[in-house]
Image (cartoon, rainbow, N blue to C red; front, side):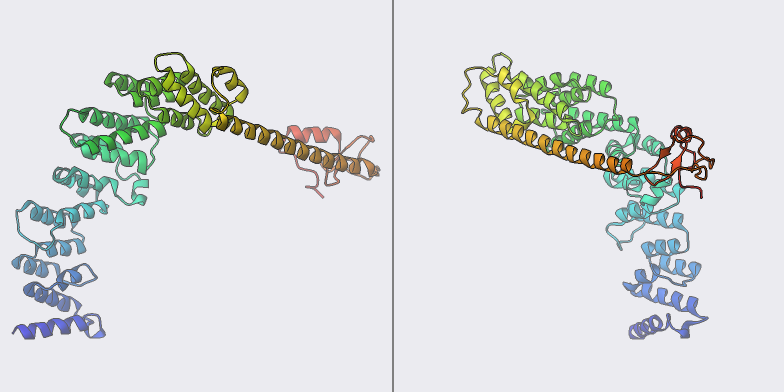
Length: 440
């Protein structure tokens, strides 16, 4: 009997896509489904996820009889009954019914909802997927197809309201809005920064937590504070200072253009000289050279200021000058440096400053030479134009107003067109006037 059924399965599978099946497709596919379900055949799922003509009522009853609940969900989905399909799969995950077809059925449901255009269905099961796993469940909002996100099918504010009960999912979703979608809204950027800050404070040394998580979150906070210009700086500054986070305070001072305060924190509180140099590079990114030079001079002045850490800061000052020679005005620097410092100590700086000075002078000479050459070309063209004669008669017409010239005063354009002086003036003050040569 089993051999006969295997033969029948093979035969029906062969003929279902041929002309022999015309008029009998529903019977053939339904019979094939029943045989697959009864034999626990792997091809059952392949049949249901591809185009088929299985009769819904007959097939559903048979699948339920043989406890093929996951396959029954696929059948419902194929017949546009997604709500019934998801309800069935949720019952399997919850253990209300048993079907071991997929060990990753929860992830499958999340993926299914992610690509579902049925908003009501997604909202219905949003709490369920989030309660199972915040990190995975939030994907129903963060992994949606980009074209659907652009249509704003899910209002971000509605999603944020839903996620208030799920802190991990809330962070993931705000990261999605700020980083992935690049939404330029102050409340999203500020909210994300506050959540990062709360997590950093919650897992400070002494609390039971994994150090790697703290480091990662603090790195995210610093990156957001540096890259974003949308969050409320003063609001965060108050919280950061109260929490005693010097690096974050320095970044926020930088956002407020309070560079001396920021560099003072980095140098005197943190003693992180590398971070101080990076700060100068970060805040001067995209700015003109004098702005960057002013930042580096401010840092140098802090290094050279008298105090208990003067010897250590002197070493930092030498390193700063030798590594960033081109960022300084050598004349000003030499006036600031102590007379006891040897030339050998500042050799890299002095050589770099000389190279930069020579390069600047030569570049200026080249630019001056090019400007002179261009000026000669213009003078030559002007002489050529002045040297050519122009015949003006009462038959010549202005190319703007099309009236003859009554006086030997006119304006000649590079294309040879002649116009009245008042017409030329009118054309320059009124751009909509026709250009010379536009009329014939």
